[in-house]
Amino acid sequence: MWKTFLTVTLLLLAAVALLSVNMLLRKNGKFPNIHVGRNPAMRKRGIGCVEEQDAQARKENPVAVNERNATT
Image (cartoon, rainbow, N blue to C red; front, top):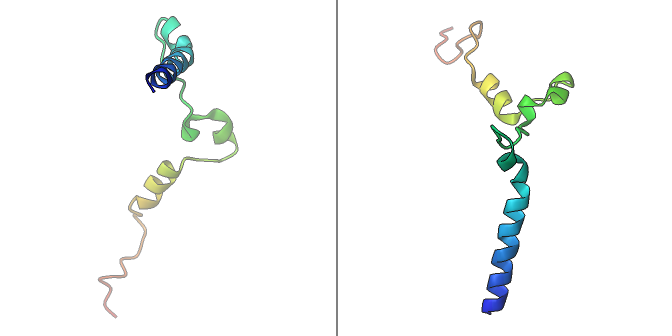
């Protein structure tokens, strides 16, 4: 049991170390931004992030008609 636990722990530590080598070795290293809304290729195609689309949909429309308080 301990042998398996130690093996799994060492594999996880090695995976984390290998995934972060690029970030650790650069002067101002940080993880790459893979957010859809920040990707230039996606922007050219007009593809946006769901969060950004939701924020735009929730913006108040200045020319919208207030139908809840409309009296006829």
